Structure formats: C-alpha cells, structure tokens
Image 1 (cartoon, one colour):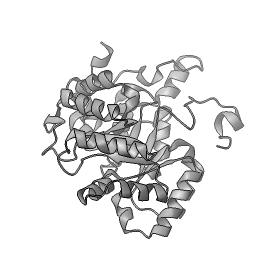
Image 2: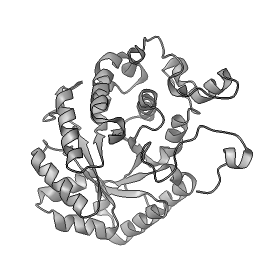
Image 3: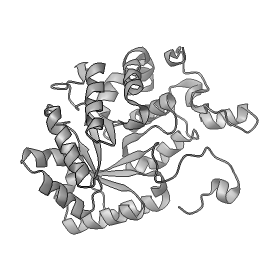
Image 4: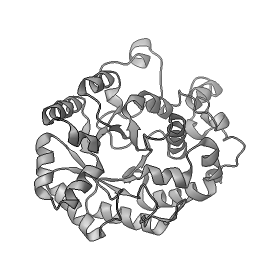
Length: 315
C-alpha cells in the first residue's frame, strides 16, 4: 500500500489498525456481479481495507474469461476470493464434490464458504467431511451458522431468539473440523440483535446478551458478523456500528457492499457519525481525542454513553 494522506503525508495521526495479511479485523465484501473494471477503481483507492471478496451466485451467468480477469484483479490487491455459499450449495445438491472444488481452485478461488442458508442444515458429520475435503485441497474454509428464513433454522427457537447451545455446538464442530472462521448469518443478527438504532438499543438485554454468550464460548476472532447488503443503508450503518461498539474496531465484518468500504473503515476508525446512538455514535475517536488533549483513550469506541439507555454490557 502506498502512503496515505494522513500520517504518512500530512503528519496527522489516526487510529491505526493492522495491515494485510490480517488475522483479525477482516472485512469481507459482496460482489453481486459488477464488472472487474468498476472494481479496479474502488480497489485502487480502498483495496488495502478489503480482505475477502465473495462472488455471488449471479457470477454463474458471467463468461468464464471475465470471471478470471476479476479474480486476477482481486489477487493483485492481496484479497482472498470466495464463491458465495449458495454456489457451493447448488453444486452439492447436484452431487458434486472434489471435482467441483478442484475447478474452483483452478479458477483462482482461495476460500470456500460452507453454509446451509437456503435449506435445513445437512447432518453435521457431512459438513465436517466437506470442510476437511476443502482444507485438504488447500482452501481457507469459512463455515456459516443460521438461515435467512426462520423455518428450519435450528439456531433459533423463534424468529427473534437464538438457541445459544445449538449455535455454540455448530460453531465448535465446524472449527474442530478445520474451518478457519464461521460466519453468523446477517439476517439472523438483524432479527435477533436489531436493525435500527432504536431496535438495537431495545434488544441489548435479549439478542445482544445471547450473542455475547456465544462469543464468550467460542472466541471473537473465530466469528465474522454479517450484515445483509440488501437492507437499507441506514440499517447497515447501525449494525456495523453496533458490532464495533460491542467488540472493538478489529471485529470481523462480512457481506459489506463493496462501494461502502470507505464508510465501514471510517466507522471502524471512529471518524464517521452514526446517528441514533447518542454521544456513542458522534465521531467517537475524534471526540475522545478532543477530551484527552489529543490522545484518544484506549477504549474510545465505548467511551461515550448510549442514547437514553443503561448499557448492560458495562455492568
């Protein structure tokens, strides 16, 4: 990465995050079928902050030579390339396995998602075996828990309540089989933890508390918190803020829209406002900088109070 405008050129210090290759604070972005030329422009400016790009099922309709150009472009920026989990699901429904993975590898894919977001999860023994196969073939493997729809989702007891024990069980089994990390389905997080500032604050003692139990059991760095790119921008920003408020700037975030990488990285650094959370969302790093004579506090992202709410996480 060439020098940035802040510290390396102007001499202005910013909150620093780790650089590639990162072991934490990953950002995975969704590619819904954009052209590789469009993405190259974004990557020139923001590629240093993107760790994984997920190519969705729409790419099955693209010419292979275009896909190869896109993958080659992403690799130039040290980005892991992953097919969407539904692509892998389709292949498995058609009884393809090792040959399918080998073809993905030949195309340049470096990471695989093992999920069941469209159907009930297969027996965990089958998921574990497929994880081991993908690892044997050299892929990084990210498992996933939760379904977009509540029906058939064993990770929930109702649409807005997690089955904590089942979540922990599925995550541990995927990790034990060799998965590097596990995605938490964004549509589940939306329903359970909330998808607007007011809803998120209201559900602190329910959905957020349950999610914290899971994190404490399996470890924060092993999880990637998704946020659907299909929900309104205001919703996405609130959810991203909440992940960062809870777990810090180096939380792993997934399913970001590629054109919003600058916003997400700015929220991670505390230099972008997120409305609805009161002082906690008001440029928290800059506010901390001003409050402490030019040196932000160590935990600046949780330094300021939330709007009209008692924070149960601090008690």
